[in-house]
Image (cartoon, rainbow, N blue to C red):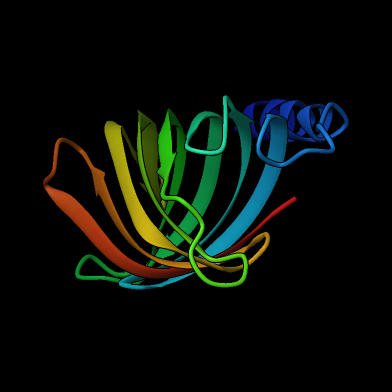
Amino acid sequence: MKKFMAMVAVMLMGSASLMAQNPDKGLSWAVETGIGTEWEIGGRAQYNFNQYVAWDVLNAKYALDYGDGGNFNEVTITTGVRGFSPTFGPGMKAFAALDLGYGAAFKDGWNTNNFALDFTAGVYVIKGLYLGYGLGFLNKGSHKDHLLRIGVNF
């Protein structure tokens, strides 16, 4: 698991060095955290095709789930699509993202590998800073989490 996490960290840091200066086009980087039925922290490499559509190239998250089954850890690696509305107000725009991929949950020697799906909808309140609602599914929908997310897109 340590090798896997080190590989993810190297990939994310490498993508940050390739960022474009124009946030509406090219590769950008984002970090976010969420709180709700679990606490999560993550990072994302995002490729913006234009001001309305982006590809979440790699979205990696760690979560501490303190739900029904007690405290257990979750790690998800996903990829997906992100859509943006036209700008309204001073630098504000709405967005929605849908990511699919792999997730693992583990606690005290117990481990399970699962399908992961993550949906986020929110608003960029100022350029780069966003707030939103997150809904995450793990293990084909049998485990779900609701979160309030805050993030920064560089």
